[in-house]
Length: 252
Image (cartoon, rainbow, N blue to C red):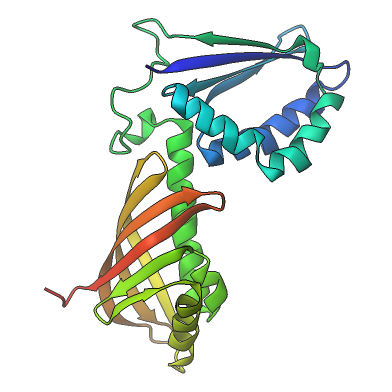
């Protein structure tokens, strides 16, 4: 059963603006990236020492996993944690675990599927989708510029690129494939991807999309059309492809 954490921090005198900036530009984006669901953050209307925020967890196992991902990360230990005591009084922190009442508007949706309308998605689900779209864009830019290393880095270490020619797996072979693909033509070619459908389930996801491979220039030409069926996973480096399967529209 889902539950909520209401966390109240006593902000040190004169530090409210600095702490809010840190929360909104560093702490909350980082936690959302690793999978936290943040429902809101608040400051006191007349009391500058009050800062409150609310997080939601699907169950205790998810809370433990996300706590580990956040507070045991090198980023938290080295970049965030050492700065926090200068801004808030750690001894006065209050954490309340709560359950929502039956008609509360912040109840967890009955289905956590990303098929729900965008307006009912959680902050975490929207962030996941944006991260996967960004990954796809970095994939396109890397292969179109011949940057084989960056292209391979959009896959997990044992990731697979699958096409009619077979499977290419592992960082070294993926990097070589992308570099060779770029070097194999004197024309400038661009991957244009659209109609992406992303479905997230915890730390795994799928993506379906259409591809147009275009030869650019004064008279652009569509060289081929295809579709992608992707499998992705989220790890310490964010979302990465585990399998990227491209299928030409001429394939049966």
